[in-house]
Length: 131
Image (cartoon, rainbow, N blue to C red; front, top):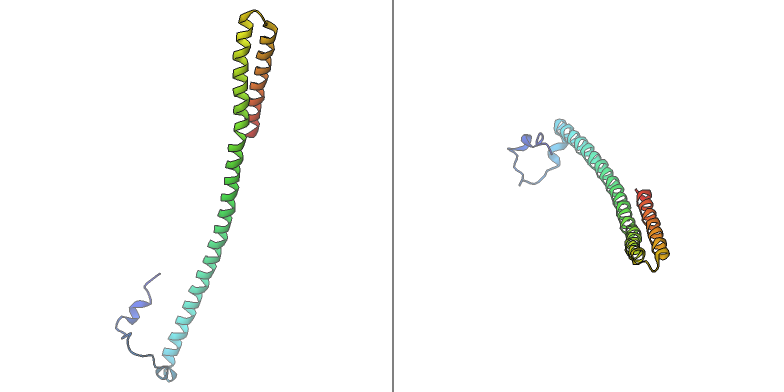
């Protein structure tokens, strides 16, 4: 707040009671009070407009914040699916390689490796489609 009005009243005794009769016969004082009333009123209107603008911005920011939290929750919820697919695929590839090298069940090993590779591709596509 500017201090441009205050210097006029530095020598004024603020403890003396207000006497409206002083202003009834003093048109200059009435004009001064009227001007100050207009100035104060315009400042009040500007402050009220600023408060309304800030309230509007605040509500917009709250909505945006809620949407971002929802996106974060969705992202955190959706990140488990590709992780589980990749985990199953890695375990499947490991078991498949063991079956292929064991020479008993070579066909089952290659099937596990193929299915696990397919799961890895699905997990990769799922992650890339969410970005």
